[in-house]
Length: 297
Image 1 (cartoon, rainbow, N blue to C red):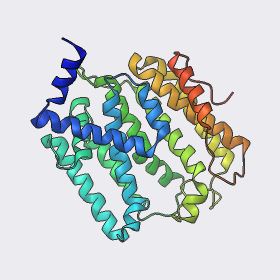
Image 2: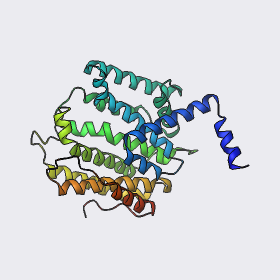
Image 3: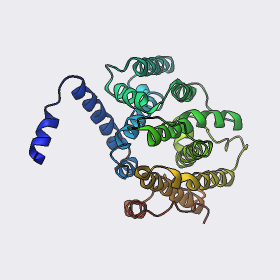
Image 4: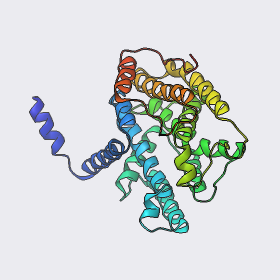
């Protein structure tokens, strides 16, 4: 069969197959619009896990936009935004149960959740943390940890479910060390972003996620925690399936680079970024199969 005939058969999809594909394409569009860095790392995933990881992050992004500006810009009050978030959570849980949603992003996520074993035990904590953004302005250590678990660590655990179970005949339960690595990588990503967005979160959103304003933590404390989490995550990357390691390494190394740049600029006047040429170098290093870099070096 020729490549042209294969393409024609793919284009001839109808019914549920076409709807599923359209939903996954919609998720991929969300990611490409919102994060060039994530889109780059996703391209290093194999074709088995790639569409599933995109659907997870697309749903995360939509929920995040409800609480972080666009909903307010559209004229929604905090109470109205909370109602929209509640509706999205309810629709997500229902779609995972029944296997269909009229919301394309939710439908794509439900396909992934059903195939890879992502249940309410991971979905509900995520939405609980998103809801916190509408009610809590300053976090102490306990509320920070709870927020990061729901907003980031469970996302890492969702991705771990994909890495192990996408396309699998017999789904696996992740080992404790893989669970710990996934959680700590998610936590490191979140804390790096908190530091990068410190001024914006305080000035535009009135939030202090890290307790720096209240003096319960210092910037160095946070960076030390980030680097320890990155190191713990790096130690288990070799145990991931081969078609996932390069992408996870690229994402890990990008955030290790951000952490290093945040240390070098204790009072940045603009949001700390990694230049595109460095991103490409990190992605190339990961693509060649190198192990994650040591964030503490």
